[in-house]
Length: 232
Image (tube, rainbow, N blue to C red; front, side, top):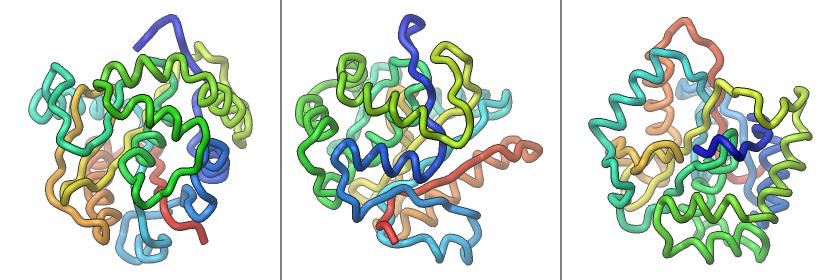
């Protein structure tokens, strides 16, 4: 990631994230929904359909070590091994992982989302045939998305940090494409394949992977899970 460019991080706040997506052209029938727990009874109350699941996790040592193992075993280092139909982009800008996760969530569900004309649709139209790295470079100059991100980052419940303040949390998105559950992380050069899933079981299957993240450091409680789903 570029040391010369950093954004104020986006808060993991469903209201803020939903407003951000709507400003970018996502129809109001879709929004970011809190997932209050990963057990079946709590997953059952999440509105359907669920298009994507987003995990915010603290970058503890144990998690980081496991991430490196995942990258070595499941990803390629050239950034060219993206499965057909999966939209994956590199995170070049520091603290932009929240926006990258939201873009991954929408870009891989364009048929369902029916995105309106706006900053995000223009960005996705321009970047659809680009490489993993080229998409990340394009975001550096996507002024409409940048401005909207800055506005949204100031609307959280906690005081926004300075742009160059180190942030010890990271967002990743889980999506379903062609019957496979993929983890999309702008810091990893290829999507991580987590096995088979369907549109109907995406939430439960992604919850299983989120539990695996949490199990890497059982003493750590600072995890947040939200979903891109039908608004109430």
